[in-house]
Image 1 (cartoon, rainbow, N blue to C red):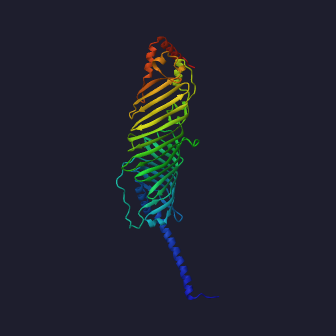
Image 2: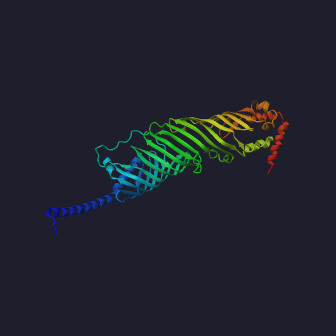
Image 3: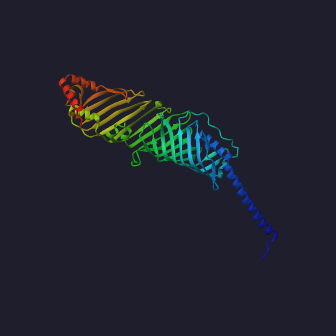
Length: 443
């Protein structure tokens, strides 16, 4: 048996002692790190830096270290936000610590996963100068850096007309882009008081102060109609400049859900079009826009007004009215909405063209050219000579002037018809008895 030389024996013993010391140090340091990460000092620092970044008052539930570089917490709760975010709740949070971030003077937490969360937003005032970070020579980390945040079930909410609005149950991912952030969302529900419920197909935003850029925001009728969408893109100011620029495209969107509830069973069709909008501020009264809309496969069915007209005048029942054309140019000017170059036609029944404007105070105005065919005018012998005096193809046209308000619309066609009926008492009596017959018809 060969006995190691004394220097070699010391080297073996020294190496063993070094390994024992190294294991002891690792265990000690590892235990110290675990104690520190799960202790109140690190959590207080994380609360402070996260709250400062989100501009609110927030705190994490107790932290747990997972493995060598893992970190988790049951929740983060934020309230009293004084910028965009008012409240924020996040549940079942986990992430991975990146030790290389220390070289950049930050505690870097990568691959953050949030099981569910909800955030409430508000409109903010224009901000002043940006806060300055720590001096370049401060080596010890003084801020927290979050990378690749994934939320499996997120609610992004805000108030509109004092009603809850926003995106519900979406899959959200937040990734850094330099010192800025990109937001990418898939699936979920979009709800606002002036729109029907819509499905979120995809949303991609880049927040790069002083503006936010939306490269794609796609909403759909429902999952069963993936090609029927609203597509929005544009940008908006976040600081002193609050201007907004939007491009909105409709692609075969169902019309009925956008109408008042009473009309939905009576109207079919799919709307396509484009709208450009720009404003100097966040209020609609500062905006201007223009575009167009076309409705295809449009059908009007079982309308009460049509039933009343045919029953009263004895005209033929047109049944379901398929529209050969239905389109208009749209405009928005500081709170006033207008529809011009309106065209709608049901062959053999009516044709309609004209312009309608609704001002910011809901005042209604406009001029409509209404054309009817012979079968729907025969009940009034003087109709073609006194009212529907302009002929174009099979249609006889009259001009209708609109007035009043959206709540109480008015027009000048009814008084003109009433004056003609005054010239023919027998016709007026005949119409009276037809109307009375409807009153006593209980079938």
